[in-house]
Image 1: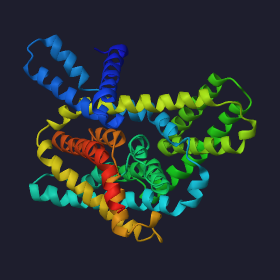
Image 2 (image 1 turned 45 degrees about the vertical axis):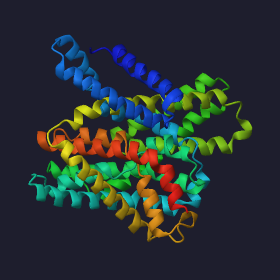
Image 3 (image 1 turned 90 degrees about the horizontal axis):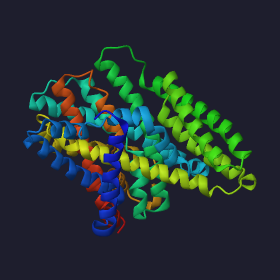
Image 4 (image 1 turned 90 degrees about the vertical axis):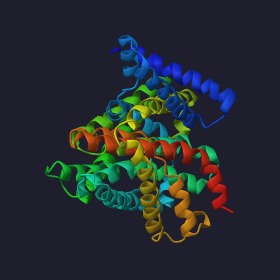
Length: 414
């Protein structure tokens, strides 16, 4: 089954029926329900694959289990998902919270990657695995960034204080670029290829992405400002975001950050020229739908492929260790970062602030896509272990932490 239409049909079949069942019966957060039930469907599919002797059935099932997340996300829709999630952020909020956003997205991501990498290295040595320190640090750079898609689609539904909700969302939108820069550095060490230092890469990625994002958004906004056609406005925005991402990928800038900059720039220009803008309801409806649609597809793909990944050799055993290491590394990085923030947002103590942001640090599809991109850098066993550990972290943070976030927030806030 190599055609596009059958795959889309399967995905929408799951999205529609799981969404309907959740609406009428289970009442879970929509994205969590999609991931959780897709995992259950994937488990049923795995059983069918294992016991069926019909080759056509096995071929169909095998195809369903190997959707390519890396291609779908990194080479497809990531730019649109990030733009849709960031287009409502206000530039004034960034000015007010510039320091905490910078500390969380830059320092905490860097420390989280180092902490996780060091812990993973110690555990791998204790268990006799042949992971080098650069490999472990590369794994740390994959799991350290929090996920903007999870933050904008799941956490904002729990009624967190506006300042905390903004910081969690802003951190997740910007730390992808930091994580990618770290990944480039450490993967260069793993493959023994020449790689510039982290801060050189980070400076290039951020500044380049900023310039490209602002320029492409400004040009597209000229069109939006001088037309009342909702379709042309939508097409101009799609062109700007896609162009910014492609230009950045070509010039080794951060396409993810450029997409976020496009969203923030568009929001700022829209507020500045609000007196000249005609009704934008249709435009907003389109991007709201795109946001939900692409998130839905991503969560279903992650769920369907989860069981196949977790069955890889030694992955199930190491999943618990991966989750614990992630929790320790995240808490440690936020705690250290919080020492630079005075006073802490919303009047939290350092311990409560660190726990809240640790539990709210959901992971998602970007980490899985980065893990999949290591296939040519590692041995088969090493690749399976890292990919499986990332899947375990994504599942635990999205489902367990996502479902319990409201209760954790209420307990911390007492």
